[in-house]
Image (cartoon, rainbow, N blue to C red; front, side, top):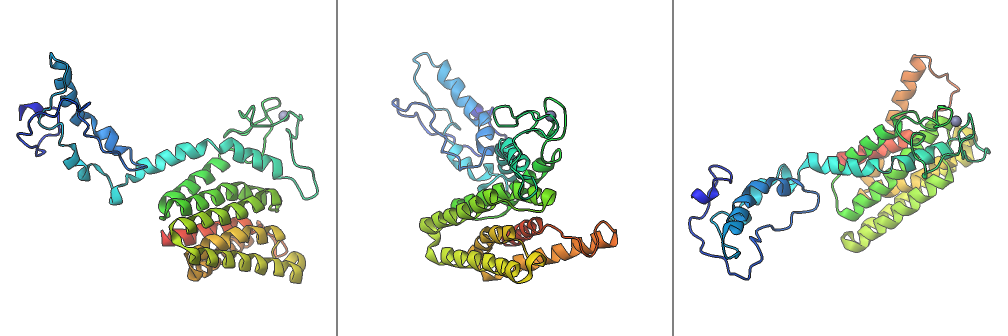
Length: 331
Ligand SMILES: [Zn+2]
């Protein structure tokens, strides 16, 4: 047992395994870790080190087995942290780091489209006209959101995009499902973030953001259907998306400005698809949560005299929040 002193104390190791065949290139004891799990690889160091030491110390240069070097196969199950072989914290941090890379793109979308209806999309700083773009993302498209020339505010308030991105990654990590389904949700969330901020800023949901959100979500759910889920959920998702979009658009036709906007109707195409994919019950749950949240916030704002009875609250943020809340209930 002296050969495994570098390993974990108290771990059962076979006493005799005999030499490994000489054509074996190395200890070869590392089965591939499942996607999204870093914990196994990091924890493997102490186990591998005795074998490496033994190999380099041998005068012939051949690989020699040491007891314990082939024991990793037996150790796999208790290397995983958390349920289902996943390490939730590592899973979350990896996705958060990847998601932060899209901050400049999201900030550019908010800055460009957060303009009143009928006004041309914003291409530069309101104060000095300095152009904004992905070729020079900082500091205008970073968390501080300041113009590099005049230091004026550009687009969304500092840390707003980053906070929503954090929430979106949390939703993605917590909502379970096959890869293609999660890809559809990730796609929709990626468009929903600038949509929420643009709607809050100027009370509109631009076609440039709502259409790609809906079309991409429908397409990715189609991929999910063709890679395992089958046609049933996809047809239900399409029907739910179309029905919800149509219902919202109908209120616009019947009630004019007192109904939902057409931007809400286009956002609803993706919302209906995501919720309808899970079932009609979740679509109803999502709508109930959306209207409850909207009513709650309206009452609070009215009571605190932040808005009046004739004020118009943007509905997009509630639709996005209600959808996420409903999906989290299923996760
Ligand atoms: Zn400027």
